[in-house]
Image (cartoon, rainbow, N blue to C red; front, side):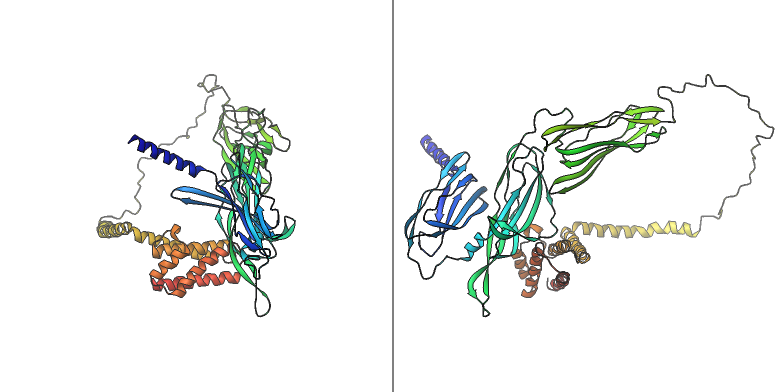
Length: 585
């Protein structure tokens, strides 16, 4: 019995080791091809690595690549990772050619692939993959992440710009995000891009067009080697084929490709030694300013004392120096104000804390000077700024330390009283009440008597209706969603002309309409599920297609420009489709 348990434990341990093993292998699209055909070679690994070195490809010409593809999936609760480097090769000669070993470093260990043998024959009449659409799409489309600085200091700003490079040989008709990067260990803020602009540039020395898809400012919050995850896109690429239409123009074929930017490794440096005692983590260039709204006032009045730091750096990520004052000045908790703009240069602007100060005694009171320290990455030194001491002059009020102690020492004077200075109070004023009519038997009396009796059944009826409505959970959810749908549809109408806000409001309206009519949640609203549910409800095919088409228009319009006429047409179509659905569901 014990032997059986030992064998079982050994098998489980061995299977765990096999699952944890690093896999790095090479694959070829074909083992035999003509000299006028192309070969695709994939180097695939199940863990992320560094310092990838491809083989020399003796006997071949590299006509495409390296193209990188990253994918993650979850199977039975376990995450599977895959990263592939792809090359396209054109053979130079016939015979048996060897593809050598590729190398990769994973967790400080070097792994190599096995050599592969490929047979190259004479030219074939019809090359099968010599100019395939998939190959053209991969070779002419590149997603690049550009990092402004690879070794910043802790809390120093860096910029990540994602660019999609497209060769003039192909065009992009649509794209969507499959996986957005998560900036672990960074404070991040995305910079809004109002409209995508196509610009001309170069990629690896060749002319390309490119579009900036995303800009993000990052402030590293820990030291050491940090990873910036890749952005992954699904892109519809229009690729020219060998076919032509009746006018002789080349026919294009649409290919869906998944592209990903490289993982970026950032080495964050510790701040140098010798930090000032009052250093709270400010990194950048700043100016300290301490001001008061007035320097002279009376006791009981108030003034505002403002501590402000202005400049460029991690403005939202450090504490301001705390203001202190003598005990005769009552000081309340400060109100914090942030006036910060974020662009590709990082955060710029000012942060301030405003204290309300109320003096209680007459006198002159100093507000001590404040000091503020920050680290300047440009000069790699710590700098300290000190404000001036402020003097508050309280002109009127009780003297500090002198409390009134009675009337001793006060000079008394005789008060002269005139004979008619005081008069007797009249005892009989003969006052009469205003509106002295009797309330008993009046209209107000009967109204006050009868109205509560009439209101009692009304309150009972209202209470029952309210209880029924509260118990109708599904009905309440439908009414709320229907109300939101009307609200967003009206909001879409208000935003006609503003493409981004219009299509966001239109999409929310349609989703909330489905919540009201079908009782489904937002997470269940894939286009396939929506089409299936509408079909089950007996909605005709045309209306179903129009509704799905509207949802697709909302998605496409986020990334492609749309005219005012197109927005008006989409709005009118949404009104028509929702009206038709109301009659059929």
